[in-house]
Length: 200
Image 1: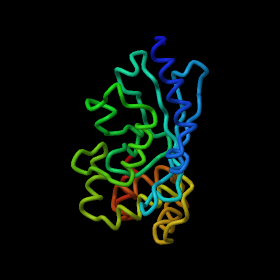
Image 2: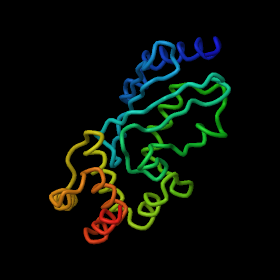
Image 3: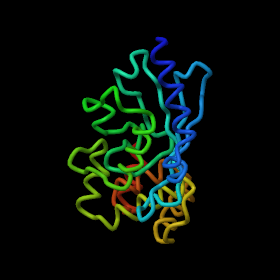
């Protein structure tokens, strides 16, 4: 990796560790490898959102051309959000694409991702199914996001209605992650979710 990128990311790594703002917002970062090309981030679900109480892991890859190009970031923890792929964890956020500026830092990226959890942009979605639910049925979206936050991010247990449906389908022999994905994408309708699971 280019020397400028290493020096810069080392400095930003320390900045995140020392920052009062990031510790107050429960944002963490760790090294994956010693040469600073890959980091592991963690952000807490913001208060008053369906993600509250959850902890969400991020994979952060630093390109050779950093800081002139943005880091490549994706969610490792599964999450139900219009701007994050429920399958791959890919993120749709302008500063990670064409709105990146060399003055931005790792701290900016982590705080922006936490802010994205609190303020989705359904008109610029990464996951069309989630965005559609967000717009058409906001209450169901919140419940689904809460449930994913519980199962994958360790957030508090949501209402029992959705968990019963998950238990019903897992009892039929389907794998739990597949059941959650099918029910979430089929508006929690057990019948159509079952058809989807059988067709895969």
